[in-house]
Image (cartoon, rainbow, N blue to C red; front, side, top):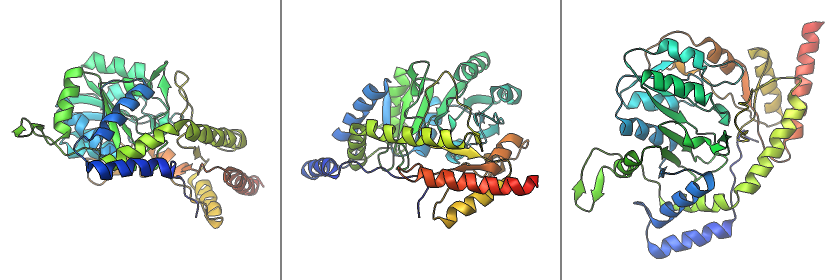
Length: 362
């Protein structure tokens, strides 16, 4: 079976050399030398400051809310991975959804201001599939209402907005380094913090509130990345240009082949494009299901990212129905980007759609 995501494995000998070093040092965790090296290399590669490696993306989001010490309601998107919402709930905050734009799939700034109340403390947008949000508009809204902004940039490792890496925006931005991502550390993530003092605080909070051998100064969490994960990240970073070149070629092939048959995500013109995922949206849920079945017959597993729409989660207080989010969630598929599989995937999609639509028009 060919799955939607293909985990990239860097050069085995390079990775083994790092592992040999770990065996020699016997340092496995607790902010080890490889984690510190990876943080500095990522800051240089991405053009950011105040970057901390974290155990995973969900922990990074939860850490962001703890650091900012916000209380009340957080305006967020209903169309994202579940952690975008669950992190808010776990931290004792209330998610309030603003519906998405049906073309970009990002939170629509026009819908944000209408749900802001005196209880609102923050805005938490997501750059969906690495497509940059309307950052300038969102930041203006936040300043007007004195709100914090936490960007979920989980998919945006390769994205720049107005010539700066997208992680430079907001009070805090987080990015996932899960194994399925363009850059990964097996499990893992990073948090990028605008304020220097908050960055210093984050080092302590990430380490269970410990600031020295015999000193606990605040309530913290264990959100540390380990040395094996950092070793994988250092290997990946050396091969990142190869990975991006391959993904870009796949992305461009799909765009050429499918743009006349399906809805493609409208990209932010002020940002560079991400090549992490390739989502396609069909005319109806029935079309989507039939295409998915046709792909499965050829042992190709496309995924319905992101379903369910997060406004339907069972553990939140239900508000207004997020019409556009639910609609896109019902008609979307993310197709595999594996070198060599793209012609078969696109051919299967096109043939299936031609058959379906010819019957509908007859």
